[in-house]
Image (cartoon, rainbow, N blue to C red):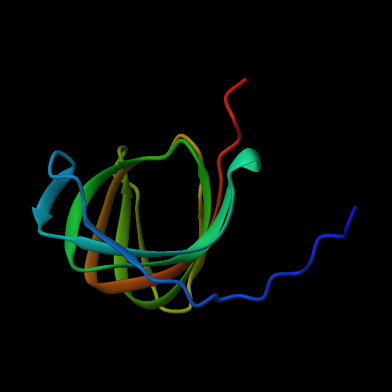
Length: 120
């Protein structure tokens, strides 16, 4: 059996582009691009980059996500009204169970690490 290797990121991968689902959009016409650089489906572990154009939409997290903003400005607002404005250089975690909105004020690019364990 061979030993696992360390994977250097970012990998040169083509982005997948898609609009945010229309039933979740509150304002604008946000379009997201995702560069999935690493995926371990069995472990529910994903790493990559994400970019989105301005707009606002509803979010409901089942996964845990670590984010590092590379550019832009966004506002995450919880259903209870608590808001966090994030800008380039900010790092934050969105916990599983978070519900609210994501609003991109200026096109935003982030690095992400997602963990979504399999349901018991």
